[in-house]
Amino acid sequence: MKVHIIGGGNLGVSIALGIAKFSKNNQVTVTRRNIASIQYLSEYGIAVSNDNKHNIQEADVVILTIKPYQVDTVLAEILPVIQDKTIASAVSGLSLDVLQTKTNYEYPVVRIMPNIAAQFGESATCISFPEKYAANASPIVDLFQDLGTAPVIDEKLMDAATVLGACGTAYALRYIRASMQAGIEIGFDSNTALAIAAQTVKGAAKMLLEEKVHPEQLIDRVTTPQGCTIVGLNEMEHNGFSSSLIKGIKTSLKQIKG
Ligand SMILES: NC(=O)C1=CN([C@@H]2O[C@H](COP(=O)(O)OP(=O)(O)OC[C@H]3O[C@@H](n4cnc5c(N)ncnc54)[C@H](O)[C@@H]3O)[C@@H](O)[C@H]2O)C=CC1
Ligand SMILES: O=C(O)[C@@H]1CCC=N1
Image (tube, rainbow, N blue to C red; front, top):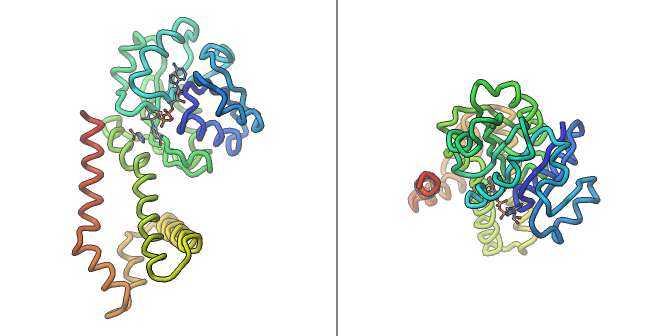
């Protein structure tokens, strides 16, 4: 499959690199208004252009990784030249209904919500589409499975998926940063603290994903009675650790829903 990504910014570039590295059956081109900062993608065999219509004719799928306020301009430019190509949108908050209205119900549409770990084959990409476009969506689901996991979900959960799966990258990184700061305070240099904190999160996530158990079952294995883990965990909870995460995630969701 040939993929044309419009919007070579943070997300567009991470998807393009992910495809080049992990999805050998697919080819990718990228456009952006100012291409100076993404010229290096050509080293990965990714053609870049500042013309959204360049390379678009050869594409099977057009992926939109632009900001919500850029959608109308881009659609006005590309719709006259893309006939029945599938449009896959990663634009946050843009529902399939609104996208279909903007495209006059004439194009197969798919909503995708990847995260920037696509570049490392580790995105959690939620996908939804109208049932009538299942056949068009199928190769897109396959592609994002190459870039991590790609569950198909009910569209009413796509905003929630944006928060949990895409914003979630930032939340996880902030946890790592806080651990690193604490690590420095208790004696490590910053590089060592970061390496330990990041690997510990990677290990915890890997155990969860492979053992498919509730996190608390693994926490039980770490918390020695009257030991140092449980007193630290309880102190964090007294200070609102879980509560602040839950409140933050709900606030992010409110922001998307407007
Ligand atoms: N950054 C992330 O982690 C994620 C972002 N998203 C969504 O993806 C979209 C893009 O987000 P980012 O990549 O962070 O933004 P960004 O600002 O880094 O990327 C957007 C890119 O589109 C380009 N662009 C703007 N107008 C254009 C046009 N007319 N033609 C071609 N290219 C144009 C810009 O130059 C920019 O490079 C947003 O809707 C965002 O909500 C979704 C999931 C994760
Ligand atoms: O912060 C944002 O609005 C975008 C959507 C998901 C990740 N970044």
